[in-house]
Amino acid sequence: MRQAWAKLTHLDRRKNVAWALVALAIIGAFGLAYMKLVEKGILRYNKYDRREKGTLRAGHQAPDLSLRMYDGSDVRLSALWKTKPVMLIFGSCT
Image (cartoon, rainbow, N blue to C red; front, side, top):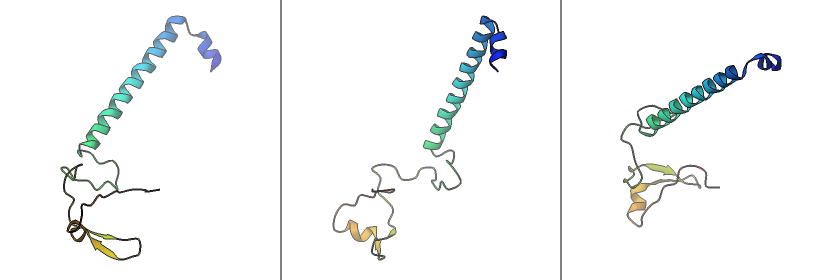
């Protein structure tokens, strides 16, 4: 590989570097466009992505659903809303 690179002229090296930069720019642009489509809900992130277009956003009211507590009992969000505001955090809390 090193011998093949050494045989290239200065102009050929510049062309190869330029093509590599163009390829990286195209791949980067595709990646950004893909992530924007995922954010808008047009494309699914993976097979486990259950979001639907127009789903819950920050500041919107959450649907009334039942959650399992740490002690194993079930609680409905509507029961919690009656007494105080509720903040849902999904993911790791560690």
